[in-house]
Length: 105
Image 1 (tube, rainbow, N blue to C red):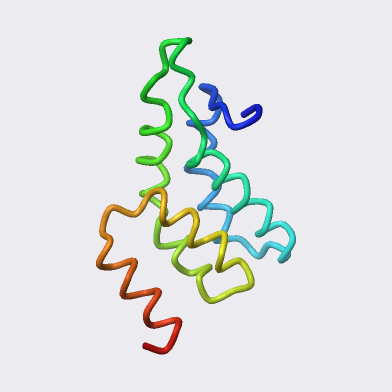
Image 2: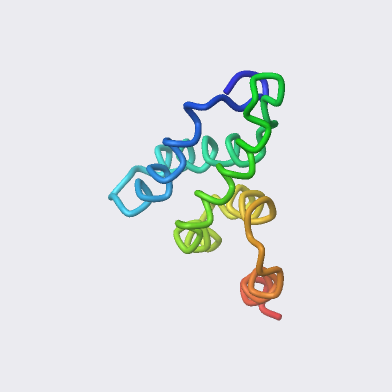
């Protein structure tokens, strides 16, 4: 990924990132994992290279580990987790429920 553009190497990385959140990582390492995941799911497709659906495929792959991103809502990484969920969560009611629960509503 360079300046927001996605490249084919991003897709195989996506499933590894949420899986890494299962490990006993330092807080800083968790920050970096989520930041990279966000950069990928928010990245722009490289249509000129014939991979115009790469962003969609990366977001679909990220949905497989979505519950691990939801776990991060209760941490200092909440804003980053919400940004990821805003990009990939298709069940808007579930996202609204979790946000409401965190805000005490």
